[in-house]
Image (cartoon, rainbow, N blue to C red; front, top):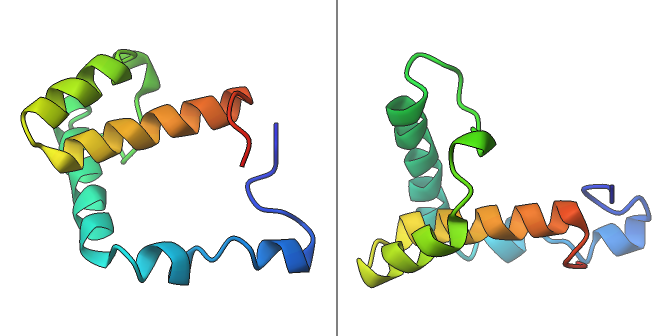
Amino acid sequence: MRQLMPTDSAERKTYPLYTGLVDYFPRALAELAHHSWANNEKHNPGEPLHWSREKSNDHEDCLMRHAFEKDWLAAAWRALALAELELEAGEVTA
């Protein structure tokens, strides 16, 4: 499995997590974090925040349904879930 971040200091600078992500989308990321929390409360009441991967594997269909409904936070969560799973599987290279 690929490391989360490069170990080379020069290469790490090409992953500007704060200035390239948080600075760009602060409101969307805050709402997405709340979306994760709210859905954890719905699907895993009383449990610590975590991604119950076994409870839903139809990310593509859910992503499209959320897009049709214009529920962009839910669509973004599903898109990130798909990206994470593909990266973990080595199907997408960063």
